[in-house]
Length: 310
Image (cartoon, rainbow, N blue to C red; front, side, top):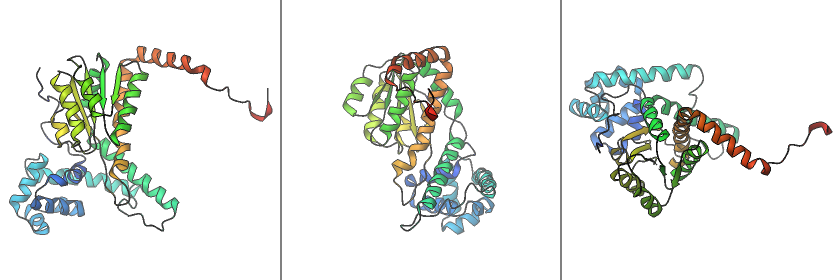
């Protein structure tokens, strides 16, 4: 079976470049990390700077800037500048409407809960927008088409990603798709070994480096299944073993664990896949939903009438 990822873009998408730099910072050399740090510290200045200016500001060389651009998939610094300028222009417009107030502010131990709540909502909204900017909708369509026609679907995820895996599996199950969620490596490998070319395997991992999840998806791929990775790090190993990678987004903060910060964007991607599958299976999905509703109706209490009526 041809495992070539035909859906991979031939050029980088000019949205979400700052998020790609942020999530991929751990894979950079020391010199390129300095460039990344300078770009993230002041994206608007980077969009205005020449290659010599950025090299001087970051304490590196023009050669390092060029390698940094190629690492991100750009032919040169001019293309990267355009991408940064495009994104910072959108961010400035959102800021003027009040969307991005206090994005970078840390939460202090004495902050009142109303301020904490607003900060969390602001961060989560930004992550969802980053996901919207980076997500390849054509790839989502391709995944939905394969799931809709699949004989069976396996969904893998461990740790915090297990929650997202179960939600996605339940969404498929509600619409009549034969789907299972596996969160323990031995059970998952046993299931993956039984998959074939009509089947689909989806793996969810924020980091894209969880060894168990990579092993699960790899096993499914070797059996001929169509494989999908959902991760915030599309350059990580999980994406490399998948036929299709769907990128979510996450923003790191000192007051919040990565697993909590990433869950909302991963759930957004999972929900979009589920809805896209339901659209393709509309008659069967509607019938499945109605059958489930009838089966459990006896276990739902009748609402009490209001105002003493009846």
